[in-house]
Each structure stands twice: as structure tokens, then as C-alpha cells.
Length: 126
Image (cartoon, rainbow, N blue to C red; front, side, top):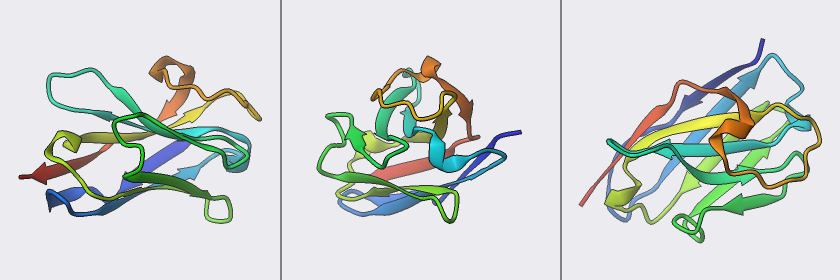
């Protein structure tokens, strides 16, 4: 059974930084694409950053240049380093795992991810 557990959320002032972690268990972590999505109050869940099984990264335009996604297969953990945070980055952040191994497609649609964490709140004040 696949489980994803996020941590590292919190409150920060604009311009600050946070690092989110997503600990995965119950599967072959290194074979699958992973991603971070976020959902602000009253808005739909949106893609933020993804990382393929081979380590290739891809980002939404809104976070490109400020966020960095990474993964450590030895620790079965994915990270999201968030710098230069803005109030509009305020949201619940979710990690997700694709269900197809060795997928080289940079998917950004939430429906294409089979497993989800419970989310961690990030609040950025101005």
C-alpha cells in the first residue's frame, strides 16, 4: 500500500523560504514520477512542480525560477525547496505519485496521479 506523507509547511513572510518533504512508502519509489500540487482556498488544485523517475524536473510557470523539486531515492523522499515566496503561493501543498513506472511524460494533470498525501499548509504573509 502506497503512502505519502508531507511535512515542512508553515507560515513565512513574503520573500522567505520553506522546504517541503514528502516521505513515500509501500512502493518502488525510484520507478515513478512524482509531483507537487497546490490548492488555494476557493480554487482548483493546480500543478506546481514535477520530477520524472530519471530525475528530470519540470515546473509550472508560476513557480519557475523560485521553486526546486528534487528526490532522494535512498530515503524514498521528495522535496520542494521554495524561495522568494509570495502571498499568492499560499495554499495546501500535496505530493502525488504517478501509477505508471518509468513514465517519461511530463504530466501535470491531477487525474493522472494515482496516489496522494494528506497535504501541508503553506501561508505567506505580505
